[in-house]
Image 1 (tube, helix red, strand yellow):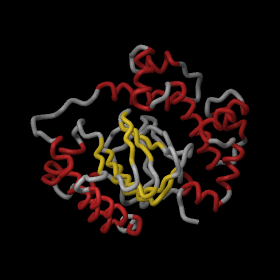
Image 2: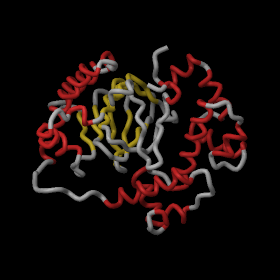
Image 3: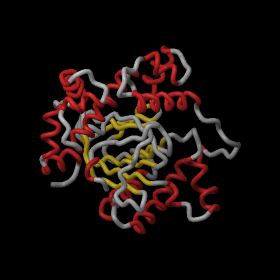
Image 4: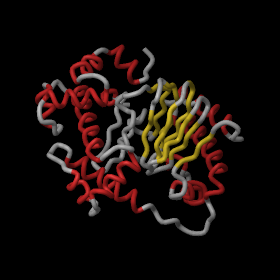
Length: 306
């Protein structure tokens, strides 16, 4: 795990997340963590090849998956499928276990891949699965998820538990898999991803709504509609949120002055950067940097046990 980016969701230019795996040689991330309103990893839309599984231990939270908000109460679990646009929402402090893992870990043979893995991860109708309440598998999933933090550095044990989880996921997903041929992907999602890509490449400059829309060859009204559908905010608000996340990365990983950081993140001056940053993260850039220079505060805010 890269300690410099704990508590941050770091994305590639195309909007996909660079998952901060526990072990660089094994594509798995397990965390017994917490969230609260306005932390840096809340409401950050992203996608990745990995499957993401979250179980709520205390409190409640929500996930937005392709623009649909799913409420999770204590004991509930959500499985977010590969390549879906998603982000977490924390209306109150919550504790949870998160498990992010590459599906290829299960692909021991072509037969297993084609019979048990691909029918789920390649099915556009399965954006997510939720286990809650009286669901017959909810308790089993919860118990399996609670074993993971203790084995987070043991690839063999993780693989065994992932197979057990996937067996339950297959059973839950059975009614989605008709076997009647490939379902076409959602073209609106591809348009949205292309606009996320454009913003990631262009955020340092003077980006306009017209330019964002033009990057997907669509109207400004459709551009606004897609951003509100998938991330619940306007394109310009999304742009500002991205700039502030970049500011947070520089505050934590460099000794650059606030003026230097403002200049390379697209802000017209330190005052404007500070005002915008506070709106998203409830701290000024100076307060944020001071917080993350304190090792104890850093562990508390990233979910690590002090």
